[in-house]
Amino acid sequence: MTIGVGFIGAGPVTQAIHLPAVAGLSDRLHVARVMDVDEGTAAAVAARAGAAHGTSVEELLADPAVEIVAVCSPHAFHAAQAEAACAAGKKAVLVEKPLATTLDDARRIAKAAQDTGVPVVVGAMHTYDPAWLAAERHWGDLPATARRIRSRIVLPPNARFETLATQLHAEPVFPVRAGDPSDPAVRAASIRGAVLGLAIHNLPLVRRFLPRVERVDVARPLAPFGYVLTFQGGGRTAELIGYLHRGWREEWSFEVWGDGGELRLDFTPSYVRAGSAIAELRTPAGLRTFGPHPDNGYTGEWQHLAALATGAEPLRYAASDLLDDLAYALDLAERAADLLLQGAAA
Image (cartoon, rainbow, N blue to C red; front, side, top):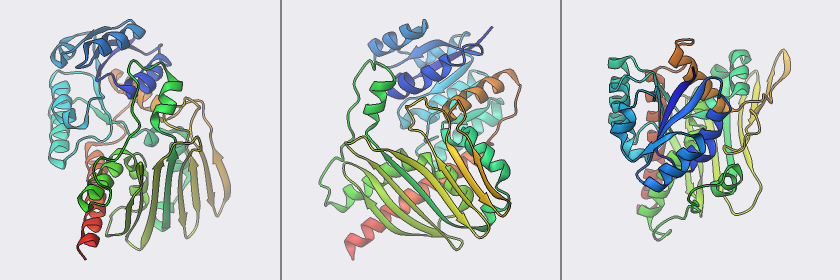
């Protein structure tokens, strides 16, 4: 018997990332039900997996065939839906990033998980990437000696990859910044959205090497969607660049330089099932390379969820880790927005 998965929200991430990942683990998982507020989308996506469908979260949570719940709805609904999934006694819950849009909402999810004993996983896929996990086991004191961190996410719009990964039920739209880009409030809102929408993918990695943000030096939104951020903390400096452009060139990298070592990871784009990152770790003992492995971080997430549901593994990241990751992202987003507003007022 395989474990039934229910999806709350059937948008492009569900269609192009999660359904293929679950299908690749058909010896352990199957899609039992798909819910979406658009009945046509729910029906079309469910039909691909031979699953039931509907427009009601309550019906999905009441379905005994659904043992793992994936919350892939708009961010504002994450807290209530994750709470309800825990209360329904499911075996595990996946919440797409960000966990929530406020710390109070995130604490509600953490409390629900603690009270019910239902494990909650956040869709921070790079923390489940096999190459990242292998490098983590061998990097020694690099987190303590790190001095400079750089994250670069330069990609075509998601739609390019989504339509290659699957035939979407509804075509996605290229993100466009709303409002007057010269308006400081619009620029501040843009940088907040970019941090929580794109930078957040690598922020749990950044936090391992720069645990606390003390000052943001540069915050610049990029059109049509992106950011340049430079910040400091504990004598360390991080540079983050994110940009969705209209071409085909892509780079998704993460680098760390420390007193006694260096780390670089090159990730494959999210929607491309092309295996794990390649990690290069240089320490006094020499250069080691990890990857590419056949599976990427999304597959790693689902492998972990299946193991949680059967009791084969303990929860890898505690609720406190997930709360700290979100607090870090929210703090960075607010500091960056404040810098833009202060610069406009000066």
